[in-house]
Length: 243
Image (cartoon, rainbow, N blue to C red; front, side, top):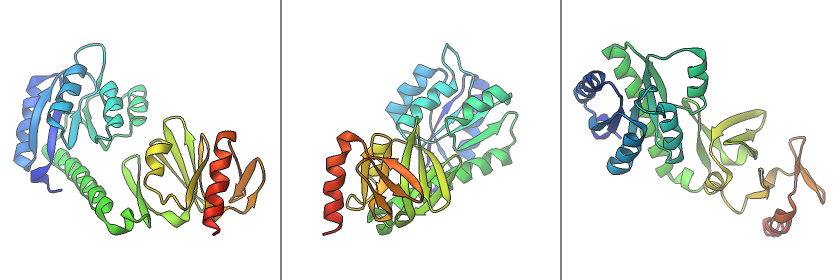
């Protein structure tokens, strides 16, 4: 996706700053869909305009702030960049948990803003290209978003996936990637004849199993429990794998 085609929504409660941002973005070649000033206004305009990216101030008018907006954007898998003057530790800790694509501190200069947006635009383009590649569609490798980065992991290298709150821990070899996702959406990207959910919190690569017992499997020296409601489906999938 080129910058000329990237559609951006600005969420900023200070109209002077929002207007300045709009002018700069249009100079950079981006399309500004609109400006929102509150939590409610932001969510309404996201649904209305369906932007590719949201520039998001943390402090907004009303009881809910930009981090509340970010939590809703994550549910829609919509990328966002924080643009704010608030850099205190507690705010940064809250902001980090939402996994933004970037963080631009006010007062910003034109070059810093341009560089940040170009990096995000590149990441979005790369993700779209990867999702359209045959090797991703056929499950040979998978892009995993972790913080600001997108990590490409070969599917056959994945040992198992563990749910941890609103995050997933993806284990492969001696590495682990933490990504904000859930098991149902993540397992849809994996070949169903190779990966199986064996517990409410675990998905395993059946080709990586070293030991099978009635209550657990062992992969990479980890004992992974087999949930009662998943046991029948697991052994059925295992039988198909060995046919």
